[in-house]
Image 1: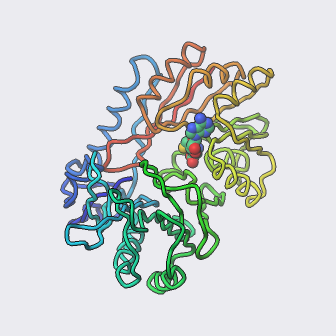
Image 2 (image 1 turned 30 degrees about the vertical axis):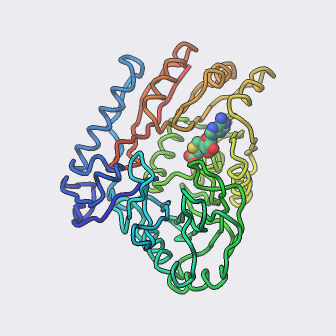
Length: 407
Ligand code: SAH
């Protein structure tokens, strides 16, 4: 979750090109803690990120670190906004983010990096609670109903999903509530109630009920249409994601024959784009692996939706799956891997090497675990060539990178 507060000045130049002057103001900057680079110009941020990647990769580990691929207009890029709901001292509803390391809710009205419509919808919901007598959940007493609101917006399609996370399934006058919300925001294409009675920090529970529309949104990336369910992982910066995937697929240098693996595939994005590539050279066949069953369901639908027939999906732990494939003596030509922040595992990488891919394209959202994993691959005979950092999260310290390894 991330969020900053009110932006008083817009610093992008006329045509964007990310010329933030380094004088962005955000009332929540200190307490939110997400945008640590607000005082830097955009160029300075990119330089810092390149340095971060360089520091995380041991000297000689990679052939070359390329300049960071930046964003033209580095504002309001987050297509997914999550707001936690609470009451202030006077009992009035507030919504925003947890203050760094605490359970205090920091109210957020608007934010430099979040989708502006999503922030507006969250504000509307907050304003409706009183008249609909919807009680906000209280973490201490464990009473009340509404816990979080999550809004996701399809960048290309404009479709908007609102997820109301409640502590229990009983949601009085929900029909009227949804109708009133749609009157205020006809842009909303689907509303889902997610039920989360747990006490841990996970936002979404296992059960949900569609209150309006299809229960998912769609978005278009690199010419393919993707269905996104409430709990499926989907990159939060679609503009930069196209650049990231484009680079990953370029590095894979597909010719049309390759047997490709897409590990940690989420809703199938990279593998599906590699398998279809409207107008480009593509994979012969793709085998995609993902742990989250909802994401796999989305991925299978996505293949059908785009008429892609040379892809198969498996719901499994990527490490276990690779170990089994290696034990069966299977082979692969190209491996895409896009693990979570914690990186991959020794078992995965050892088995990956046994499948003998000529090229491995490693996409990482954490340069530190990338650095650790590239050392393992080096031991296994895979040398890292170019690393392309991509700025997926302007104003924050995070940096994504895509790296080509060859045998
Ligand atoms: N490549 C996708 C998703 C990347 S995020 C995209 O670009 O959209 C990482 C994905 O790895 C998530 O979907 C997560 O559910 C999945 N994941 C996490 N641990 C896993 C594991 N052990 N085995 C398989 N998939 C895993």
